[in-house]
Length: 174
Image (cartoon, rainbow, N blue to C red; front, side):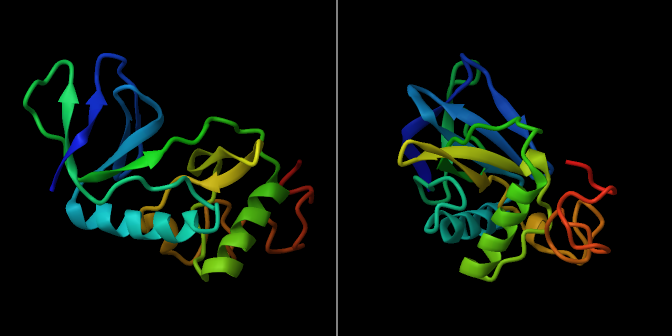
């Protein structure tokens, strides 16, 4: 499927590369982005997870089916890889408190039964809901949900210490 409603904006180039996904801005749509994946199957999986999470405001909203898009700018006529249009979240805040990350991890599990293993700062963002910032998961790829230990080395999802089960223990700091 080719999406003709939106175009990737390469005039104001912006992309955020992950392991299996690149996020591009969309032309004339400052609140939307296009998540492009290395394969159609990875795009379908990530979209399915993001839809599930976004129903509970645990991820940005999804605005399209899995599709390909055209580029505006340097590559006229060229099509993107497979992906989907999504609401953009504000990212780059490495000062998120560990207890807030753990609350998100727990909320995701309580509402969807998904285990958010890869719950580090680069996979988090903020969306605005009811005039307030809300912490959400922005990485919905397969690698984020598969695993037996997380980014912090714990055998339970989240940043809490598996040894002392506290958020502010000496091994994690604030």
